[in-house]
Length: 81
Image (cartoon, rainbow, N blue to C red):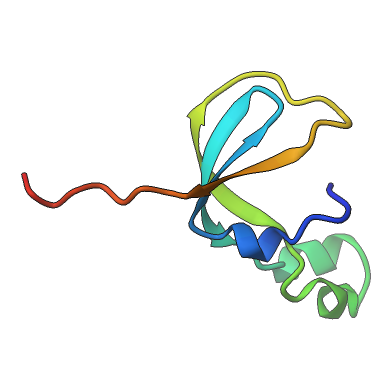
């Protein structure tokens, strides 16, 4: 869980949280399964606020209080193979 971080703005960026580096690949949209586990209407409050999906580049520890650091736009792999 984060506070004060514009997560949607990190789409397509490299980030660091604690020791972990990742590339944010897509927004995570809430699903009906979550609503089944909680209560009707919970999804409305989570639209465009469901979090992020990311590819982890390097693992490590993430601890409470670690900041989300924006490392800038992710480099796209070259297609010159």
